[in-house]
Image (cartoon, rainbow, N blue to C red; front, side, top):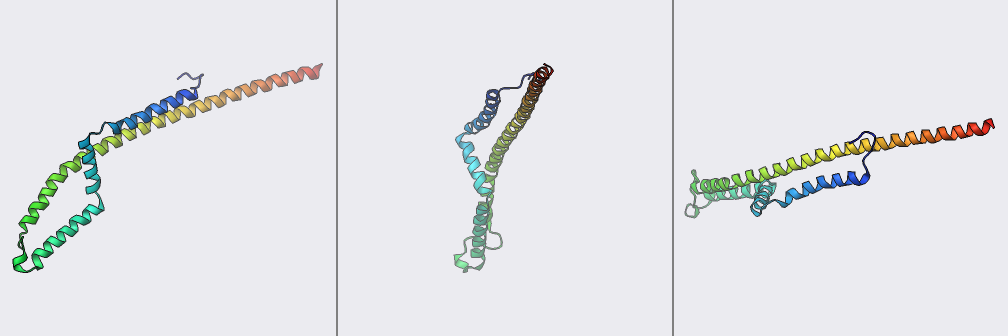
Length: 157
């Protein structure tokens, strides 16, 4: 950017739109499997999922401790079936959660980069505004000098 010539408003808007397109384009490149991983990450990382798992665990353990002997299907104290099912849930969910977190992190990085570019553009816009104000100030001072010079010429006549 040249120091003497401020950028036009059209150019500033064009640059800002470019950055916004970059940010919006990032969400279009997400595959169906990535969307599934993001959905699972959002749902599993919620308080609702924690409550479901907690209630399921309490019910399972309570049933197998306090129900009649013949109704118990996972005997106390081992709870082998409960441990197996819990471990399977963990084994399946952990990689999906990690994939979702990686995607969220990538998108957050893209947003941060775009945010930085927009902030840099805002800095250029501020400089442009200041240059316009300085140019206007110089023009106003020049006009004032011309008016004073004409006024002095009229007074001397």
